[in-house]
Length: 319
Image 1 (cartoon, rainbow, N blue to C red):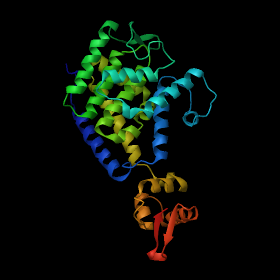
Image 2: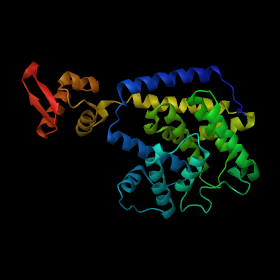
Image 3: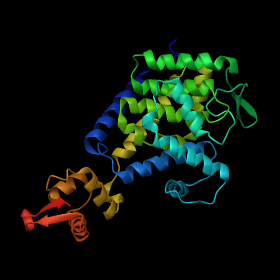
Image 4: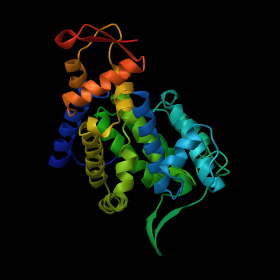
């Protein structure tokens, strides 16, 4: 059974805008994301998704944990981060259309945090907003068939992946299939569905934008609950994805340090091809010729680049 929602003019506009941003990013920026960028965005994703659930660790602390170093913090919070790192490192092993795969991911994500990790809840749950009940989830006995229906939609619907990911996210939170971890699992699974359509979404930290607009996130969920369909939430999530992609596109090379620019260029440029200062500046379009020259000199001095020729005939190679 298809979950209820409407395709509004705003949804159509956002789908078009998101698709345009994806094309620009694939062509200009993230076709070969640097290791530094992948790590930075992974940290942002984990930090934002867990912070929404009350985790207190900072991005710096998560980076420290990711490097297998110890941090001072609540044991539960550290365990949440360790579990999330493990799951996000294994994203490629999960099948977004498989319910069995979702249960496996929940088992790892909530390991040591709840007793029934990897299993559907056995009791009723309600989501509180202050001292009032914001959402009463369906009875526990209904969860298995509701989840089966939801995955049947993922498997059989011809709807585009972008919209399906938003529909799934809302329906998942509405069903609230687990005793704990529903929020982080819903966001994780939306990422997987998006990745199936466009691999670059593995490194797009839209959770960070949700964290920044958390009140709007819960408002969109509540509006969809009241309306009986996910349209409001789809609109919200498409705007979140669009703004996250725009942030990536508006990334300014001048905000990177010389070493970051050099590392990114060395990672993305074809090592078999020589390049000029002009070619270097085509990758970092906001830096000046003087900055490019200083970068290239440092690259040569550090042994990252080799240099041949002089003045207008100067050429560089990645060593």
